Image 1 (cartoon, protein in one colour):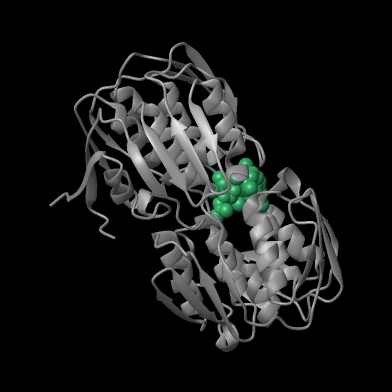
Image 2 (cartoon, rainbow, N blue to C red):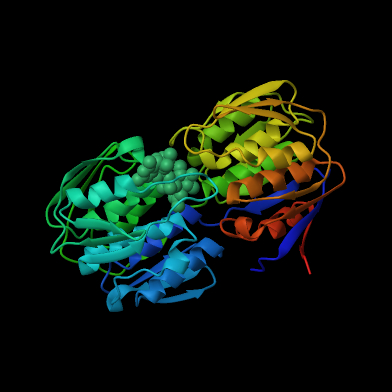
Length: 420
Ligand code: UD1
């Protein structure tokens, strides 16, 4: 991964061919931390090579966990976990590193983890996680930007999770799996990554029921054992590839995905005039020359994912008609300035983008400041006339495995060049 690289894209080629989806980043981050709950080695398969994954591995190594990452198989041995202090320099890079708080409280009864703080998506607090730990008996102090938590033994509790937070649900599932007694998480997140975490924990010997509904029950066990487990496909990568195909008027078979996980994307693309054929683990996307405008609102799963709002806005920027895109989860519209540089006509008002479709976008130098905005700029560049140079692509490396190679294999003219 070279942080000073940029993408140079010559737009205008309809994507065609077949492409496989990698393992889910958001699942991987949760499962890698959960793997260190076991007292012996866990083997995780289908783990994507992405910089967020490398970051969580480095954090665990710093805590004493042994790891070995070969191909897409990651071995995690938490038997030798010894430090309860997570390193600031690594934790601040990524919000999901806060999952180590649940792990450390469960394994060592003590955790010192820097608060992830704000990021380019605006304020992203962790108060629901903290309230959950407190409900499970932990004494929690916040000192100098650091969570300092201690408990003799976590005890099961009934916890209501505000806004069905994905991160809080993950963190509390991790903590509760080794707690004394039963924890009930109400208004829990229902995302497929939560179901994946529950299946993984259960294969380690945990007793988790109800994942995929909004009430999850976790009966704590004394210890968890090593296991072998394969991570689900990345529904956000799958959705990004579907949208990229749609914006170029292409025809692509996207393989190794779970169609049910991208249902909301399928429905909205169909409404935009895109033809979709589904089989067990594949989706064929056949796009019209120009999509129709569709109104979309982001929501927790099974609603339209906030992580695909940006690529979808890019698609709607060349649609026939005006679409209204409402963002309900995060403050995530800064990237529209970059789309405007490419000729898009987008106005943002009170968390809503009003996108007036233009017949075409034109290439321009643009910069991404976060992962999914980067995906939107790639999507836009594939359809734009002329050359687009995308800088800041270290953000894209966080969560898309080999994206330029995958797109190139579909005929896209995209290359990664060093800024030097
Ligand atoms: C996860 C995903 C991210 C996705 C998001 C929503 C991972 C690693 N990241 O992020 O890709 O966009 O879910 O699907 O899986 N909130 C609080 N207090 C808290 C926790 C959350 O106020 O303690 C708020 C957040 O600011 C946000 C909402 O709750 O407005 C939902 O956030 P949450 O589901 O926790 O998102 P993440 O887990 O950070």
